[in-house]
Image (cartoon, rainbow, N blue to C red; front, side, top):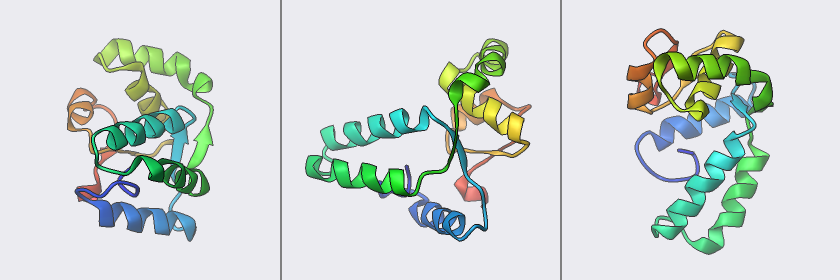
Length: 128
């Protein structure tokens, strides 16, 4: 998201995206990623942060530069367990389950999630 909307750490996010394109890093996300990002874009347009007319272009950019997508249903059993154990949303638990499954840190700037999941490997853009 930080590559589509200007804000804190946008430059770091753009560098990470460019490194992904060059094959330096792999970026993974569950398939619900598209719904979440689409929702953020619509809310940003409603709030006047971006123009409504820019939504199709921004979403097309997202699709073109998408991470490696993992079907969310394959992550549900572990995600339900995580959500129950540490009391996070099933959406957040899906990302944690994917991170755990792939043996990689979850890249997030969600401080609340990081605090709720101390046993999971997380990293923020500030830490890159």
